[in-house]
Amino acid sequence: MSSLEAVLDSLISEVDAVALFSPSASAYDRFVGEDDVDVLVISRENTVDAENFIELPLDFGDVRDRIRFGIEGAMDQGVIDDGDVLACVVPVFADEPDTVVRVRASESLHTGIYDLFVHSRAEADVIRDVLELVIELGKKGQKGQRVGALFVVGDAGKVMNKSRPLSYNPFEKSHVHVGDSIVNVMLKEFSRLDGAFVISDSGKIVSAYRYLEPSAEGVDIPKGLGTRHMAAAAITRDTNAVSIVLSESDALVRAFKGGELVLELDPEEY
Amino acid sequence: MVALDRLFAEIPNRILLAGIVLILGMILGYIANRVNRRLLTRAGIPEAVEGTAFERTARSVGTSTVAIIAQLSMWFIIGVSILAALSVADVRFTAQFWGQLTGFLPEVFVAILVLIVGIVVGDKVELVISERLRGIKIPQIGVLPRLVNYSIVYIFVLIALGQIGVATSALVVLLGGYIIAVVIISAVAFRDLLRSGAAGVYLLLNQPYGIGDEIHIDDHAGIVQEVTVFVTRIEGDEAEYIVPNRRVFEEGFVRVRHD
Image 1: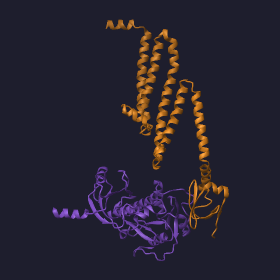
Image 2 (image 1 turned 90 degrees about the vertical axis):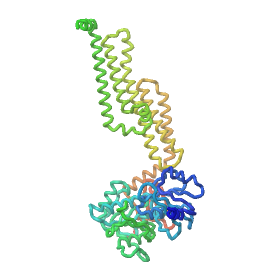
Image 3 (image 1 turned 180 degrees about the horizontal axis):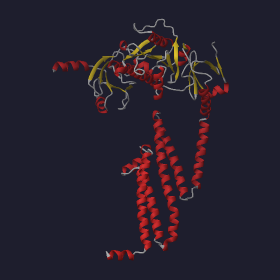
Image 4 (image 1 turned 180 degrees about the vertical axis):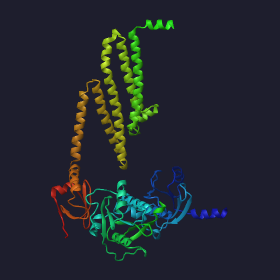
């Protein structure tokens, strides 16, 4: 077993910080007792009263997304610096931590997944609510049929000026916000409509049926994605909005910010 | 058998009747206890009072709010039946005293009920408010729910005392002073907020401008990003203006037409 121990030793040698994902209180206390490394806690809720805490908006199914989110958050909060080496203790298959990942924090790792939630114009809760809605829509579809949908979140005033109505706006003079359970049903029904949903910074649903008219010049997204994704990416380059797209063809959820793809996830994993 | 007959013959009819009244009262009281308990549970009282200090205290001594109220009704009926039995038995020497007590007993019963309801409602309101304020991380904010709780309990104590005829005018004056102070302070402190809120309700209902419109309010020009009850957020060229809604009514606004 000595070669296995050697592997583990090489994973944890000379780390600058330990990142605990959803740790139990006793596990956190044990790590805090040692004072030669920084301890980060990354989870949905700060149940252990950790000093360096990064809130996960979603339980990312992809462990890489979870780690990226944690590292970008820690770099943003100044807990770790570029080039620091982290040992991430992550639960992958169970609720208990079962995996140690060694990773070097660097700009090349940067995808903007943390910025998407925390440094967007719209409130983080609103983005999370829309993302959860889209994931649910992707999982169940609309009445069992696959649907595509495009949500533009934040900077609604500018988005409205960069788009035009395809038909009457069903949300005209209404005051509904994403995250209310009844609204989710409504949005699912409306998702068969063409065009984009526009949602304001605070989560108010401003309009459905919008045809986006951004200039798509210089927008670089993976080849093979359709016009919906192109429009979604382009509108985030022209405005400070973020857009969240459910693809009709491959049923993946993608988020764009600043004209770039920052997050891609499979609804079936949630 | 003969001895038993003799025994019954010895007991005067009145006392026999009193005994029957007493037993009937106890049965009625027991039924009231069970029925009340069932009704209160059906009405969702146990869930409503869950977590309040009163309920927790009741639990710690092995009972519950519902049980206490149900038992209270039982003891009330039993108390009345004891009085009735005594009057049937014609216990003459204390007629005056019992007469007064008969009038007083229902008042005490209502007063105790009011007090329990007051304490439970106060606790519940405190819980609800502190739940609402949980997102606001100011340690001192914990005073506010406590204050509301005590105010509610104070009012219910006043009602209870009034019920049993204790002179409460001084306490009522105190309450009046307290309420006037609260009203004046909030009128001064929340004046602008209230005016903005009233204007905001109009803006939200009628939507003279909506998200995406280009408007001018005062010197602030830009695109409307958000209209809330209290403020309108306008995105200018280089800055975002957050304009209180009352300004819209004081100054009016200009909407720029593009077509």
